[in-house]
Length: 124
Image (tube, rainbow, N blue to C red):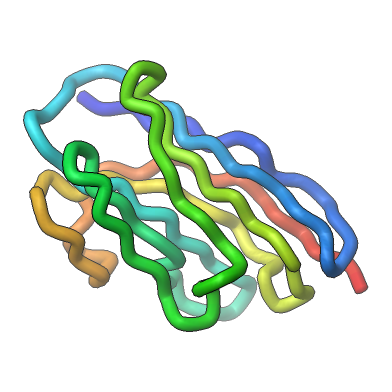
């Protein structure tokens, strides 16, 4: 099995920054994609960003481009999401997930393993 543990969430004022971490352990795969998703109250879970493990290709949803940066540290089996210029609408539970593919997919159904999530609250 694969375990994903998110950390780094919290309460921050609008305009501030947070860095989320996703620690991956357990069974490993030759190649996979790690995605960050978020789910706000009353809304569907949506993809925020994704990164391939080996090639370093990235994807960002339109609303996050220029504000969020996804990165990975292969030695630490950890994927990060640096979030800058946070807005109140970024408030959500943030999840990381793995898709056992070499190519980035955005549908939530493509992702097989999920963490428990970390709460991000942005105050005005």
